[in-house]
Length: 446
Image 1 (tube, rainbow, N blue to C red):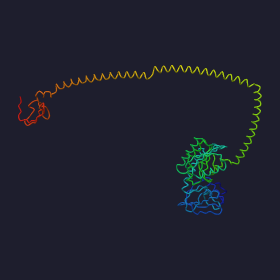
Image 2 (image 1 turned 90 degrees about the horizontal axis):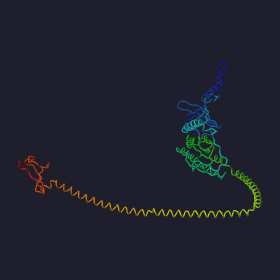
Image 3 (image 1 turned 180 degrees about the vertical axis):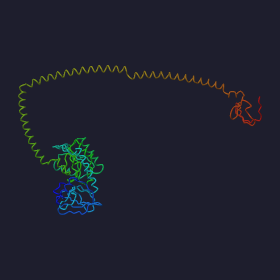
Image 4 (image 1 turned 30 degrees about the vertical axis):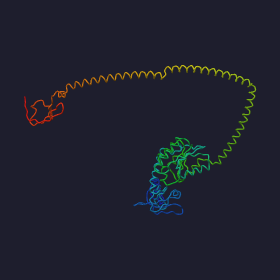
């Protein structure tokens, strides 16, 4: 603050100094509050007070600024505003000069929008040096929008009126909602892979900040920036601004304006076509004169070179070449015939039928040998089994029974000694034919 003599100020000087300090040190801010004392005089300016539970501040929003506000403010409404701190010097009132105003819900989105815009600007995505030029003679336009939206109908109507020769390829996608941003990026990627259009028109009709939010995606901004095809952004109405508008090579205020930007009036094309036709006719006449002169020169040269004799020489050479070709073909055919006969003879010698006969005879011989060997083996095995059975029968205790002997046993073991038994024990006696169960009444030991 600059001091005057003896630090004595006038009121105007003091208010002016305070205004310079506030505007220079604080600058623009975002402020959230409740509207009160709202007034809108005939000048078109807005005056209001923003307050919270403990404080309030006067605000002013001039006509040039408030025209961009999409709603009519009312007392008691919560809003988010952006403005610069200042002082109204005639009254010494400290106030906020508003630049934008959004409902409290939209305000959070607006803050996100400003933060992303600053980030992408710092990364260089908005610089004019990176903007791609729009082609001069556009033959085909790729439109990225909703297939059922009004924006597409407006674009087709403008192109049909101004330049029907331009082809339109639509890359349909959602242009509203949580998934729309990713789908728009996929449409841009598809168009760049196909490379079937000269330029891309990214567009949709107007809407609220939430409706247009998918065009404020960082991912979409990089997709537009990295596109090999030039991109025109025509999103919403003229007052709408999105991140895609800043990144795109050209921004059009509306979908219709984008179509007009990419098309030329058919009247201008008709004049250009007439001019081109005139040039074509002149060129054709000039070419005809040149070719007529050339034909005359060639006719004279042809007459001087006696074409009949040359034609006879060509005919004679043709006959010679034809006879040489016939002889060569005949020689080739003879060689092929001889080769075919040789291969036929070799094939007969190595015929599979002969091999099959030999293999069949060999198989029959092996079968007979196998049958003989099998028969001998089974006979020998039968003899060995009979011998083993005879040996087993010789040592079997059952063979002893056939000579009148018997075997006595208890439930646990064979009785070999009378001392193994006690009076009252139950014993089993096996005979040659059948068994006998007895009770011991007397034991005699030897």
